[in-house]
Figure 1 (cartoon, rainbow, N blue to C red):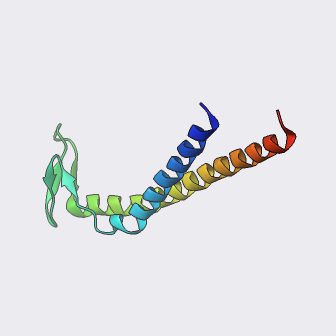
Figure 2 (cartoon, helix red, strand yellow):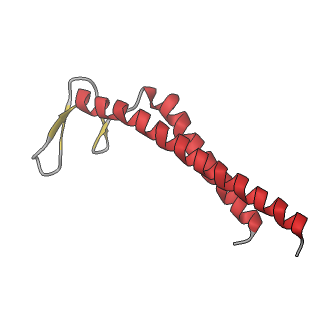
Amino acid sequence: MNRGWRSWAQLALAAAGLAAVLWAVLLGANPTIWCRDQVMHAGQVCVNAQGTKVQTYEERYSAAQWARPVVGVVGVAVTGFALVLWRGQRAAQSASRLIGP
């Protein structure tokens, strides 16, 4: 992989991390709760395909809310990691230009 593609891949990874953070902060605040292709509403229950587990709308909503900070933290970590890689590559390119071939 040449250096140009690496830079773009690292920046794309940083953008994916930022998208996760934005979802956690803005879009995940009021999630749509689904049960097998059906939108759930307060007071409804969801039974798995085997009929062995039942979850209420409130339980599923709570689980979705608990996921928000996890997705946000992972997004920050991925963004930071990608930017460190990008910066390191930029520094290596600058050093190789100073040293020469």
